[in-house]
Image: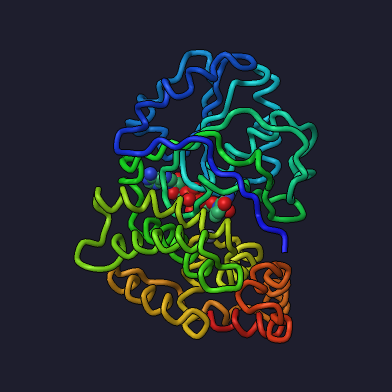
Length: 360
Ligand code: NAD
Ligand code: ZN
């Protein structure tokens, strides 16, 4: 087995109010290329106080992006890249401020500013030819781990797949827990549970190891403090913890693997457009036999925070739909291998995966 040689974020600034250090952080990079920065910001902040705290200079380009109509697409990145290069040439760097969607847009844009042609050419592992420009991520929702991962997930005409390589990883992240205060409770739950599920899946499989487990155990401890017990809830102290849990969960899965819930989640998202973190929650509620301990804790967290998840979704799915969903999930062999071991194919086939989808 080839051991992974994963690339971490170069630099991390963490703490309440740390966003105010953005300008000084990027100042040394401003001399690069055409000496301006591109900001890609979640449209949620368009009319919020953050708009006046960007510390941008007049030459910088600012794009507010609505991430709700769809997850980031190859077409969207190509258009943005062409617009930026034709307006001002190569920037010093890209700053992404938002949730997982904006993190992925910032990472993909950084790479596509220096790699010719459509981003569809680079969906996959190590297909990118040249390093991108400097890129900095400021997460405003915690859970996906997109702020630390080596992939920028894009939906293209043919596939939903990331631009995945060492150069995708951010040069810098600024983790300011004050920025996640405004996340609505349901999203706070779904995205936090993405971290929780990353850790449960990472530790429950053959790729688990002391390195991934150390991150995963710490993230689980933080998740339990945030989502279980008397002090759980969306408090300032818990936001401090959740931001760290998201990073630790991302590192844990990077050095191990995710499992059954994520494999199914890709099938659900690809065929029905269901958002990643929500899809994981919808699925995980039915995986008590596969992840018994994590499942019972998850059900307690659901109850404690009064989260209602949809039931009986599968009653509207015909066999063709189920087969299409199962096909997407089956094509993630690393996840099934991790979850069920080297003989996974003895257990996992399209019928088995369809039976799991029928639980939904
Ligand atoms: P998101 O970025 O899609 O945002 C969800 C919603 O929250 C949006 O309506 C957004 O406007 C809003 N929002 C963002 N910050 C807010 C704040 N502080 N206050 C109030 N509202 C706020 O959410 P997400 O779940 O973080 O990201 C999902 C995306 O991440 C998907 O596109 C998925 O493919 C991707 N993803 C990437 C990775 C990776 O490793 N690259 C991993 C998992 C998921
Ligand atoms: Zn996930």
